[in-house]
Image 1: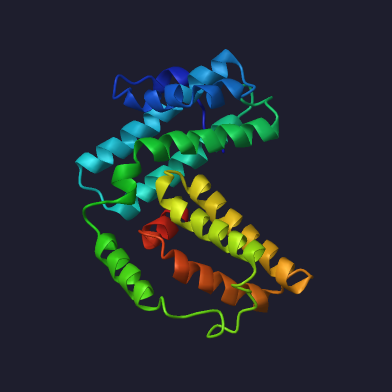
Image 2: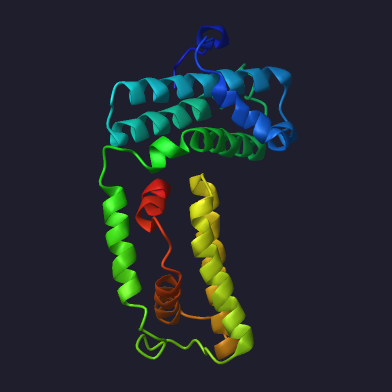
Length: 231
């Protein structure tokens, strides 16, 4: 990128609370196969992005601009890892991806409250409206959706409950990656239950009404916010 990186220029006296997220997930940080120098640089870059985000909050910056700051911070960290002669340059690509995922986890866990429930948006009201509307559609069953889910089959019912549980549980996680894993697991359960019913892998035409059925039954809270956070 042509940027000269100097780790000493990133030293900050600002808020070190962000480093508590590393202590909370100490096992993940220690599992990264990186040098001590790389660990120090990781912490320094993490503190730098944290300060930028905190400054933006205090300046009443819009949530869209804060999201841009965060994405730029991720890009900057990724570029840092690819810069020749610096601590991450010779690290395996798989480990770099793990480091980037952990970097995101630290930022999103620490700033979750402000990012997920910003005071200057109407997301809360819109989520409540969607939640109420889905609750009003609770009378819809598999026949209305022309869905092949066999609600009488105990095995299929278990998969449906598992898919519902994954969607409902999404609200308990802080990071986009964890929320996305819930969605993927939900979809995996749906494909499994459809195969149990039909004996063959499900098509997209069979999957969609089944997914709609699961979403209607789960009616996950703050679904709009979770979707926005993952986007």
